[in-house]
Amino acid sequence: MKPYKNKINRIRTFALSLIFIGVVIMYIGIFFRSNQFIMLAFMVLGVLAIVGSTVVYAWIGLLSTKAIQIICPSCGKQTKMLGRVDMCGHCREPLTLDPSLEGKEFDEAYNRPKKKENKK
Ligand SMILES: [Zn+2]
Image 1 (tube, rainbow, N blue to C red):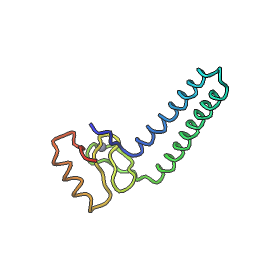
Image 2: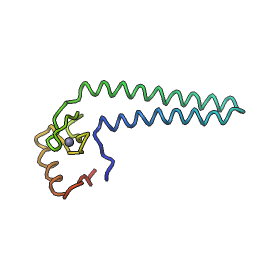
Image 3: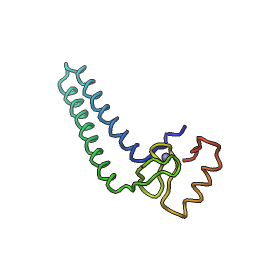
Image 4: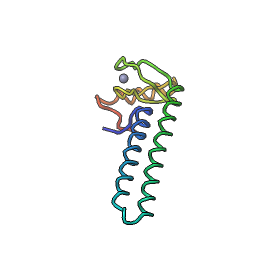
């Protein structure tokens, strides 16, 4: 299965992993207590990663206000899409707002049995 996901979900996963990475970096820093400079460098990097994740979260909030809420035609759940083409956050159905892309996107989906999305 391709890791292609709904854009907002993907960014959220990225922000979450950034927090995790930040904590891990700071934890590694503890092992360098003998060298204060290295420990400080790790601490600063860890804090930067966590601050970065906060920024990404704020960015998601901003994007979410711009995202268009639609009802997925495939699973009937409400999902948010970004840009002209995105995927349903629940069933990964390709969604598009652009009528000229619709035929192409849906052709590709229909040409594959189930669990499609081998492209991109
Ligand atoms: Zn769906």
